[in-house]
Amino acid sequence: MATSEPFESSDESSGFSGRTSDGRSPESFSIDGIIGTSRAMQQVYHLTQQVAKSDASVLLLGETGTGKELIANAIHQISNRHHGPFVKVNCGALSESLLESELFGHVKGSFTGAVSNRTGRFEAAHSGTIFLDEINSTTLQLQVKLLRVLQEREFERVGDTQTISIDTRVIAASNRDLMEEVSEGRFREDVYWRLNVVPIEIPPLRDRREDIPELVTFFLNSYNEAYDRYVVHISKDVLNALQQYHWPGNVRELQNYVERAVVMASGDEFTMELLPPSVLGKEYKPIRSAGDKPLDSQSLNSMLVKQGLTELNPANGTLHATLVESLERELIHQVLIACGGTQTKAAAMLGINRNTLHKKIKELGLDSNDT
Image (tube, rainbow, N blue to C red):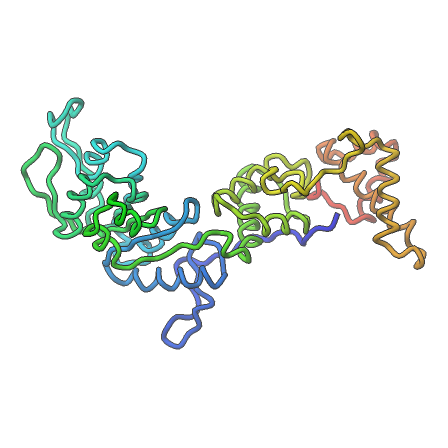
C-alpha cells in the first residue's frame, strides 16, 4: 500500500512569526498551538494580531469545533494583558441563575445554597481577559446585566448592593449568527453591538481543506507521544478521504478520528480501515468476497497477483521479485509486531533462523522502529 513519508514533529513558533503589515508578507503569520497556513487562516492570524494591540471587545464567530477558544487565548497571550488571568466561561453549560452567580459572584445568604461569599468570573479576570463562549445561549434578562458590564465595567454581586469596578477585556464567541438572533428577538441588539467591536470569523474545516495534512501530522505526533505509539505512515487513500469529507464537527472531529486511529492501529500505518464509516462514505467497501465474507488466503493471493499484473509492468522482468519482496516484507513486519519486536520469537513463528531473519530485516529496509 502506498504511504507518505514518515511524519516529522511540528515546529510551531511562539506567538506570531514572520512578516507583518509594515512591508512584510502576511503569508508567514502563525500562532502557537494553531495549525494551518491556508489563506483563510492567514486572515484570522492577521486580525488576531491587530486586535491584540487594543482592549477592544472581540466577537469570535464560527461553527462548533473550529477553534474559537484557541483564538481567544492567542489574543490574550500576545496582548499587553498576558500577565493577567485568562478566564473562560461556557455560557451554554449553566442555567440562568447559576450563570449569573458564576459571572458576577454572590454574597452569603443571597439564595438557597449560598453559604459563603463567592467571587465571580468577571472579578477574577480583573487586569486580564474573560472569554464568554456560546454567548448566544444567554437569556435576555442576563444580557441586560451584561450590557452594564460591557458599557461601564462595573456590577454588583448577586444579593449585594456594593458596586465592583473591574478592568477586564471581554472576548465572546457564538456558533450562531448573532444578527439573526437579534432579528428573531433572542438576543439584545445593544449587547450585540457592544460585543461586535471587532468580529473575527473562524472558517470551517471544509473551507480550508489544504490545512488537513498539516493538522493530521500535528495530531499524529501528539497522540503518538501521549499513547507511546508509532503511527507514522498514512496511505494516500486516507488523505484523499479526509480531504473530501465535509467535516460537520470541524477540527475537533478530525482530532478525534486521528486519536482513535493511533489507539486502534495494529502497526505503524494509518489505513482506511481506521476511518469511521461517515468519512469512508457509501462507495468504500473493504476487501470482501461474495456474501461479505472475508477472503481466504488463496483468494487473497490471487487478488494480489492480479493487482500486480495490472499495476506493474510484466515486460520489464521484475514482476516476481517485486511481488515476492513486497509480500515478504509485509509478512515479516506483521510477525514482528505480533511478537512485540522480539526477533527470536518472530524467527520461530516464521520457521527461519534468527540470523536469517536479522539479515532479511536489513535487506528489506525494516528496522526496530517499524515494530
